[in-house]
Amino acid sequence: SQQGEEDPQALSIQEGENATMNCSYKTSINNLQWYRQNSGRGLVHLILIRSNEREKHSGRLRVTLDTSKKSSSLLITASRAADTASYFCATTWGPNTGNQFYFGTGTSLTVIP
Amino acid sequence: EPEVTQTPSHQVTQMGQEVILRCVPISNHLYFYWYRQILGQKVEFLVSFYNNEISEKSEIFDDQFSVERPDGSNFTLKIRSTKLEDSAMYFCASRMRGSSYEQYFGPGTRLTVT
Image (cartoon, rainbow over all chains, first blue to last red; front, side, top):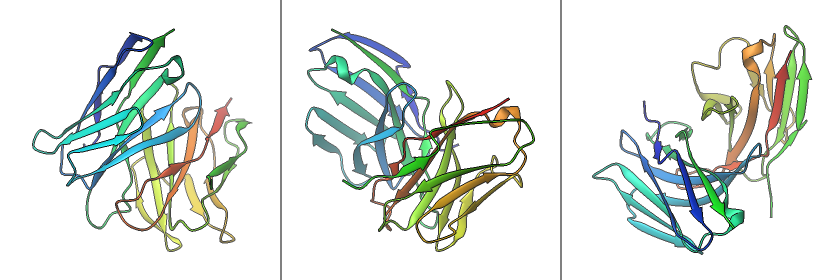
């Protein structure tokens, strides 16, 4: 299975602290994307990192990709209570597919005010 | 900012009934997808659709499921005879052509089969 797997499964931090979530996958990828899902809601795209990129920033988000280890990390700096959500990595792979996503089980982040 | 929309937000149906879930993808997108998420579980791919035909489908997408783009704007998922285990959140997504583009997800339709 190509599915990504995030760890930790759950993370609880104080507001202002940094949160780091990791994702591992099994085969080569085209790109890897991180999504946020608030409880019972849809998936919000956060950031995309291509297979030839190693690091990417967007606001308080920093994503790294290590294709040799088949892993990625998402760092949220200076966390806020509003960052409380589940975070998923999703991978796409294969040259001739419709580039469907394979999602991991997610990391549930709780930011305590 | 353009967004993917889905209707209805919540659908309750009886086992054995047919349901149609509707999605309006972003207008210049070319690939369309349906995913589902059973409560507390991961998001699972169902089907992708490009150039008016299915390009990929998962094992979940059996003969009870079908997709259609009837009028160039809507993208529908039909479940012919719903089962209790079809209860889930169903997400539509779309993206532009090219593997480097993000998939944009709709807010989902919560399907409850009783």
